[in-house]
Each structure stands twice: as structure tokens, then as C-alpha cells.
Length: 408
Image 1 (tube, one colour):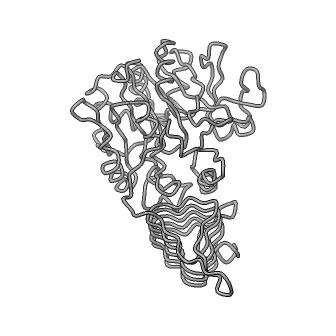
Image 2 (cartoon, rainbow, N blue to C red):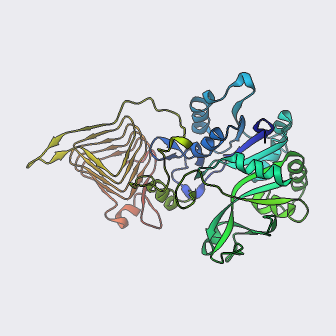
Image 3 (tube, rainbow, N blue to C red):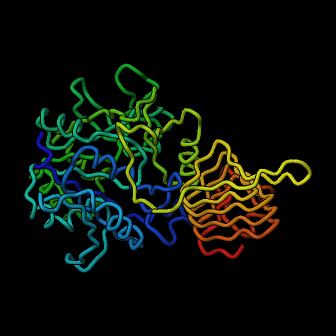
């Protein structure tokens, strides 16, 4: 398939309520991830590595930081003289003066942008998942099958069916039914322990997409969502196929994560720090690109043994540019740019966003600390969850979250 015939639409306007308080001041795709990245960088890297030349990002909720990230960090990758672009587009409010009412409605309200480019195919992706995928393989399978729509699918344990839209396919991979988050989904052919879950990635023949969106827009009972409405309605009436996820992560098991909750986000970040990480950021054959922070190298100072025991060190961690570990210790954590860990302090199993300052003798364990927070000298976080709940948010799995701007 010629990728010049493909128009990519990224859905990036969701509020991400289950990820609060990290999404109180930013859209979910703009939430930092892995120190110097944002969540959206993974899907955008897939697009860039797949050489997709035209990308429209639909934004809505608190989009300023996401817009800046795209403008300053991603525009330079595209050659505008050759017709390539990456643009963000807020709601135009040109249909009844309303906001987006669902994923399908978001695309429908901006159908004019698709028509302006007149592509043969439209690729719909989400800006809030963590994975590595060559979309060209999906698009080629979509074209070869003559499908009106193709849904990217990942194998998931059957007991996790209630978290996914579950696809049932025939021997030719044509989708015969779609179940929205069933208690027990239909197993895949050949393995009763697995189901095919929708990844929220769709390839459409443009004419079929426009017709489906037009019909859905006039259905007052619809939630105007691709997974709940568009795909189920097309099954049986159109050629709708599944495409099984081919992972570019080059590990023994497939890696695809929805980081929609605090605990899922925390665990996905921790996947990065193992000696042989589940998600490999260092594989240059499928790079994860990002906006460079232009910060100086990280620095570790003080190596005083003896009674003072003042050592600046980090173990099994990701330490971003601009960080200074000054006489404190960091274990199994992720430090975003310009963090500072001061003398005699200890940070364990935590995620620190940009410009967090940990005071002397402080102790932090299993916490996520948002941007610009100052941890006072001697403070303990993550050791007494009942006390932490009185001041901060504590997740179901006991991760303490300190929001941006919090007075600690």
C-alpha cells in the first residue's frame, strides 16, 4: 500500500478521569511517561516509524500542553514541502455548537478535514496506549483483503474480557461478532484461554467510513463510539476483518498496555526499569521519538563513606537529563528531567515528574509525584497509607499520588 493514500486521525481529546489527579491539568496523552516521554509519543513514534505522512490529532480536554508538545517536539519530523504534516485540531463546534460526544462523533465533526485530503484509506489510532506497531502491516492486510474496515486485535487472557471489546472471527479472520466488555468473551480458535481484544486501532476504506459515520450521527440512541457502535453495526453488512497485532518490541510476549488507571500507569512505567525490560526503549530499529528537553546530563554527587554515609546514587532506575542526585539514593524509580534528590534522602519504587525536589532526610516509597512538587525535609511518603490518604490520593494498590501544585 502507498502510505501517501492514507490519512491518519489520532484521538487525543479524552479527559482520562480514571488517571486523575495526573489529568487534572493535562490531557491523558500528554501525561509524562518513562521520565522524558509523554504517553502520546509511543503512538506518534509508531506513525513516524511507519512513515505515515499525514496526521491529524483531535484534541479537546485541557490540550495546551499537548499542543505545545506536538508543535515544538514533532513538527520538525515532517516535510511540509512534500505535503507531509502533523496538526492538532480542537472542536470546531460547527454541528449544533457542541463538544465531541464520542470517538466516532469526534471524527464525524471533522470529516471536512478528511475530505480535503481525499485519501483512499483512513487510519484511526488512539493517543493513550503504550506499544510498538508497524501500521503498514495492518494497512497492507486491510487493502489485500478488500475490507471496508479492519480492526487491530491483541490476544488477551479470557479472564480479562471485561476490560476489552472482544472480537469473534471466522477462519478467514473476518469478524462475525463484537462483544463490548463481556464477563467471559468468545475464545480464539485453537486456544480456549485467550480472546481477541480490540486495540482501538482501525483502518477504513474512506467511503465506508463516511457512510458509517453519517448513519451513526443520525442515530439518537448511539453513543457515537467506534467500539460500541460503528464496528458492531458494520459487522454482517460490510467486510470487517481483524488484524492480529504484530509487535515490533522484539520480546517473547506481545506488549500492549492501556494506561487508563493509576495502577496500570504505575506498572507500565515500572516495566521500563528491569534489566531486561518488557518494553525496550533502547532498540534503535524501532525508536521511540520524543521532544528533547535540551537539559544537561544527569549528575550524581557525593561519595562519602564512613559515619556520614552521604552517597549520591541511583540503582535499577531511569534518570532523565537535568537530574541531580546529591547525596541521596534512588532505587527502582523513574526521575523526569530536572529532579533533585538531596542528601540523606531515599526514593524507592516511585515516579517523579519534572522538577520535583526531594528534601534532605525525606523518605518516599511507591509514589507518583507530579511536576514542581517540593517534598519537605524529613517527610515520609508511602510508609503510612492511612495518613497519606488524609492528604493525597492513594490508589487501589497502595500507590500514593501527589498532584501538581500540592502543598506538601
